[in-house]
Amino acid sequence: MKILSLSVSSAIDADELDREPTAAELCAIVAETPLIEAEVELLDVRIALMDRTPSELDKRRLRKALHRVLTARAALANRAVSGEAA
Image (tube, rainbow, N blue to C red):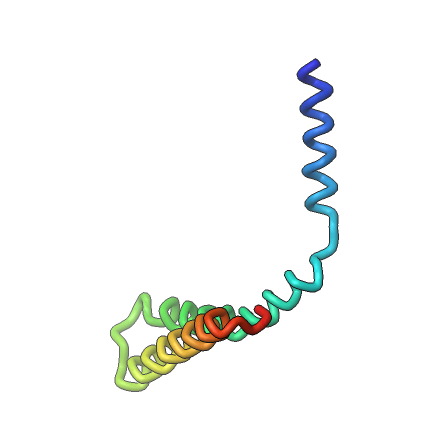
């Protein structure tokens, strides 16, 4: 009997994974895209600086990337607080 319940559970999980995103999920992805892009940029900068001493230009690039992440996080939080569709 356990085999049947596992296969039913697996079928439900497979259906859940195969579905398309809902409109609300797509809107949430679009709303979070600026933050995701800013975090990727920050990660790129940090990776580039892992094996060298940062120059003044590198430090400025790191600060700019960090500022962009913080700005995007604040905008997303403000959007959530104000009740806009996320």
